[in-house]
Length: 133
Length: 312
Ligand SMILES: Nc1nc2c(ncn2[C@@H]2O[C@H](COP(=O)(O)OP(=O)(O)OP(=O)(O)O)[C@@H](O)[C@H]2O)c(=O)[nH]1
Ligand SMILES: [Mg+2]
Image 1 (tube, each protein chain N blue to C red):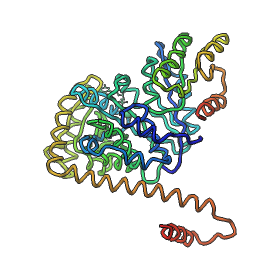
Image 2 (image 1 turned 90 degrees about the horizontal axis):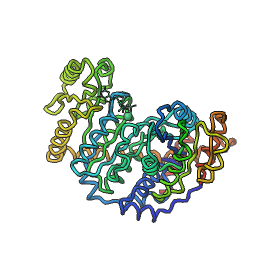
Image 3 (image 1 turned 120 degrees about the horizontal axis):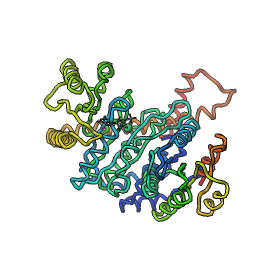
Image 4 (image 1 turned 120 degrees about the vertical axis):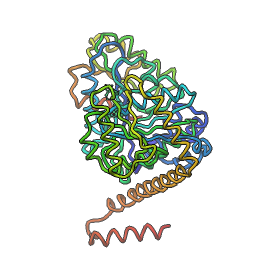
């Protein structure tokens, strides 16, 4: 209650693949750096993710996808946020994402793309930057 | 982070029951941002008075969130708008937290009449009664007929939180017998209804008997401290439990018990806010304390307090 503005983020896994080890790893790393991380579990639709992000009033949504459906799913979350009048909530994507897809995703409004090789420091930095309004 | 909140806009959205407005309002309270007093003064006291506040506590992993999700479904089937505040501890080292209660309630994500907010305890001095209490009122003011507060029952601050509620459920599961015995008397005493969840697991009946015995032993058994069995993951036993909740809520309302509890919760919240405000002032004084003028710590503390009282 003393002026402690917290960095709040939401980590979600859209799509059908059931592995959330990567998402949980990121969630724990963020917690260990002082973030409040809302975790919503696997197999969420873009609309569910957007609605949860709004209710939790997070600054950033981090998405993880291993299924190869990122080109469809990540932009769908950006779109769902825009439709819900919450385009100011930033979206970061992570997972096994081929280099050639990165510019396409950035064009679609994904702020940052994190791949399995991204060092933890850089992941934290990406979320910190995205939290700055 | 720069503060760029348009308080008038939030108040306006809040009055329209807008999801974003409600969420922003809760953040404003949690972060104690400027304008929060004006916002809280704009709330609807009639709605707050009409709302039933239910506390749910119990050991980790016994199914509190799953049960909460089921209670929400049942209240929704009665046409009621429902709010949930899920409180998790913050890491004492980093101050961060993973808030995972939502995982069990995602079925309600797209329902505009279910408000769900995860809160971290944030290591606040007086517990988090102040901000959780304000969040309850924001949700109630926006038309929630029921607000559920979920918290892991591990220590004193959790006991404080559930005291914000009009009535409290204590949830446990088979195989937690020792934990229950060891549980602080305080937690059992604030429980109005006891639930043995995971009744599909072996040992549910003996767990129920154990619980009843503990209650009798402590002399806190009454007609309502009956033990309920549920299987939250299958939606079983929920209707009976909600029936009991409603009976008890009505009886508390009639007997004046609810009024008494709200007054007590009010005092607790006032205390919390006052301590937090005081903390801010004292921390600033200490930070500004020049090395040359160091004096005995108790003397200095006294000085700070008289300074504050003079300024009033
Ligand atoms: N077998 C069985 N499993 C259940 C039941 N209710 C919940 N579970 C499972 O128990 C696990 C924990 O459930 P949660 O609802 O997250 O428990 P919780 O008490 O909220 O957990 P914390 O918030 O972490 O303390 C999940 O895997 C649920 O699916 C039940 O009645 N029977
Ligand atoms: Mg839970």
